[in-house]
Structures are given as structure tokens and as C-alpha cells.
Length: 79
Image (cartoon, rainbow, N blue to C red):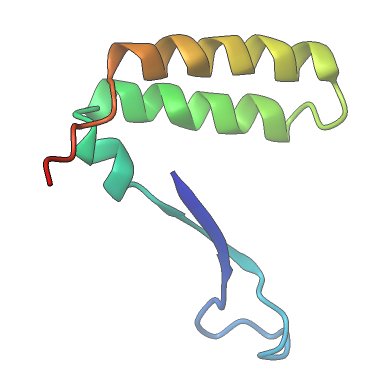
């Protein structure tokens, strides 16, 4: 998943301040994840964001992310 900071249209903050977060999902769809998995990923993000500094939550989410990723292996690149 690609995450980067982006400008928000009509944001009152100066252009040098990026107030928005863009979450790109091209890699997720390439690996074959669907709507149900995207809901699960959104839950991972929310749980971490709502529990900043809580390493127990980080560890639990990390384990769930690893389990999810194991179900959808990286596609093979043929050269």
C-alpha cells in the first residue's frame, strides 16, 4: 500500500503544508485482494491511528497484516 501526503483542494492551510493523506491501492488489487480485504485494511489503519503509542495494538495488527498478506502472495515476475 502506498501512502503519501497530498494537498487538499480548498484547504485554508498554505500550499507548503500537505494536510491530506493519500492511500494508493494498486498493489493491493494486483495481489488480488477485494472489497472484504480493503475493509479489513481500513480497520487495521483505524486501530493503529486510534491507539498511537500502544505497542500491544501495533503487534496485534502486525500479526493480522502478516496473516492477510500470506493469503495473497506477490505475483511472479517473468523476465
